[in-house]
Image (cartoon, rainbow, N blue to C red; front, side):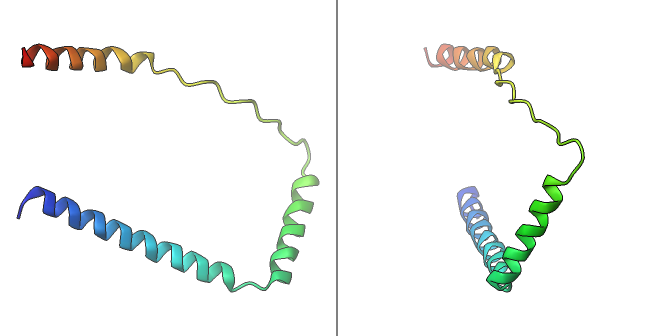
Length: 84
């Protein structure tokens, strides 16, 4: 069996497994009545607002890829030199 066939079968199995997980979650979500969902949301909101000392989250720092760019440039240089 060729590697691309195995890769295709693995991809198809991944799609099927993802579909199963989504359908199960959807069924579990639809099992609640709208009144039950509303009640849970009100309860969670009350717990969140009554929590002592709410913590402010800081904005995430921008990610830098400076450590990765040098090896990538080396790789492309090697490949371009090999083609010549």
